[in-house]
Length: 353
Image (cartoon, rainbow, N blue to C red; front, side):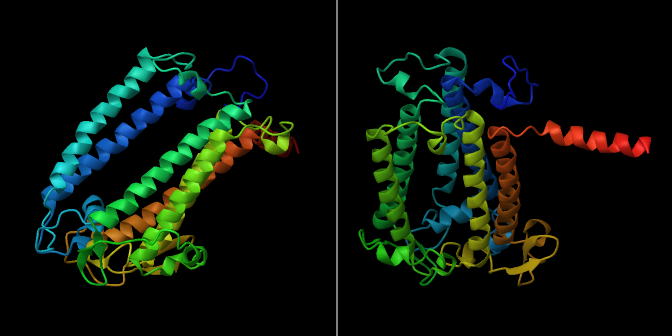
């Protein structure tokens, strides 16, 4: 956290990040507990949506979020290929159970385990202690994060390959083989990815990401700082606040991309589960509106799942980007108190004149 040169800064209770700034164990505890909250929300919302689902109304017209995503990856269908919600409640309960496991792990890391990760039950524990001015430490930790992301992409690709996902082009669940190694076609979709209409290309994109992330992760774990550690390489800039700003930028940008993709793409977001494509409007800011009348459906305030997801993701992404700018400037040393001081000085000069 930015201290503006104060060796003993104090923070209010609501500045939660301050208690994990230089304590890797507490940092992990907060991450795990946050995962538990997300897991609980996913499980609880899934069960709530299953309880209120009305098969006589299109799913996308009921304003749901969790079960449309499950339907998109081929979960909840009977042997005839009709969506019935089979097994969806089990997934919701599974998430609730694991949310308690995550909560317990968060408490252990916060209250019992070493807050600084100087020692632990395995020899490599100390390697994950955050050292902001140690580039080898930072690249080592980054490498593990990248590998985990890559493995998650592989899991999704293999799920589509062996179990199958929903293809709106044929209205059925089918297996999708991504064609490992055919990355040239994916590279050409850098600027027109919103128009992708093939599940093979969607899976190839995830396979491509898996390759990049695992390769990059292995590189970061195996390599060490080469040459002098200069400001260009992050010296004097790496800090908890800088990492927070980059995280906010990444999540915010993903939220904005999802908003545009969800609003128009009907391959990743089938109309059967999310509702019809939306129309783009621009007033004070961008937003998307319905293209069909669904006022006779049960969707909250007359909006489809697609409308909720697109608009909420965009505005959450927008404000996360603002948070990125705030924390990035603080990490670079900018003192926002100077703005208040300048405004106070202007007001004082106006009053005196």
